[in-house]
Length: 220
Image 1: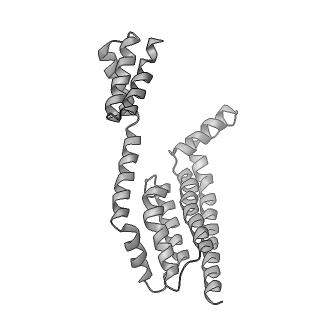
Image 2: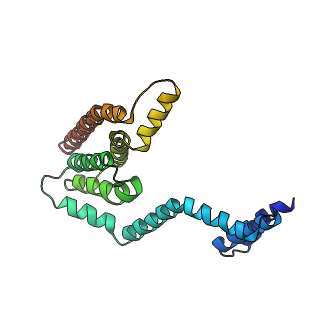
Image 3: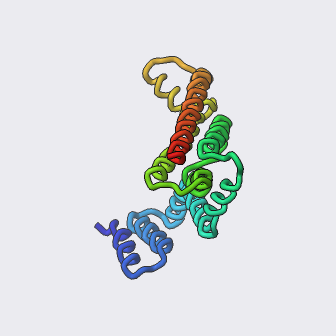
């Protein structure tokens, strides 16, 4: 029962609003000590856990940076810049993004993301391209949000498997081998190339239809 002292410390710490990190650390150390673990070993466990989850810390850092940029007008500037380009359309903006994003995924480069690119840059740019010719209705805006977010998924999901050492390829190889199917990672990557190209073509067609729909709405 005394091993649950960590939970009690966290509850008390949160109720009286003490520093969150300090409360969690003290709770972890207290739990380890009452469980009979040496103090140095407790510190070793905490350090190992921190190193293993450092990528989560980097994600939180990214979110903070994106939030600061948005607060200082990043989305508005992206929208204004694209609205000044003659001939720019939402479909063209999305076509360029999905192409660059897929190439990055093929090369296993982490260039993209809903939080890092879609929300602060790509969606405002696509919306800015539409707003050159008038306001965007709520229905059209919702469609644009869905298509813009889907662009990230198209490129990342179908592009990453072209890279032979990607986690997706290794997962496919491991699963097939467990089922008794002999396959190499190179073969999976090679088979993913036409799938990625077909995805790009279908994405371009979707963007073309989006531009046609917007043009039709403007001419009514």
